[in-house]
Image 1 (cartoon, rainbow, N blue to C red):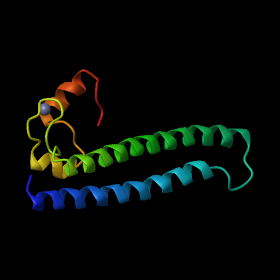
Image 2 (image 1 turned 45 degrees about the vertical axis):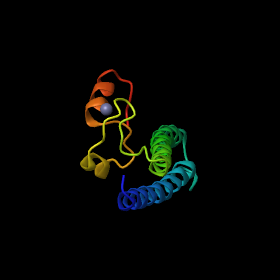
Image 3 (image 1 turned 180 degrees about the vertical axis):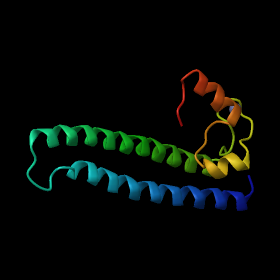
Image 4 (image 1 turned 60 degrees about the vertical axis):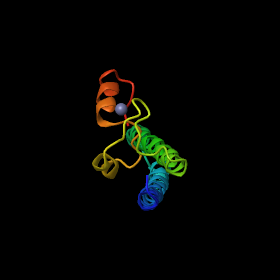
Length: 120
Ligand SMILES: [Zn+2]
């Protein structure tokens, strides 16, 4: 990994991290405040509880992504970024562009997904 690449990867990951944090706190607030804006009957309440759990599920997925981004930043620092943690082959630039926090190469990810072992 060249210094230039290192900078590119880091800035890309940091930007993603910022965006994730902003989206996450917004979504979390929305979920928590759902239905707190007036009088609600029991049907509203059931609907809100259901929706809140869906929204919090999204927050969880986002939090997982955030953790992966943070781990990726560490991998850039210690020079192991862009290498598949399964087969140790390099991950393509194209994949890293779309999924900057990718831990697996496309082949390994497909294989792990088939086994239901990995979602991100
Ligand atoms: Zn691999």
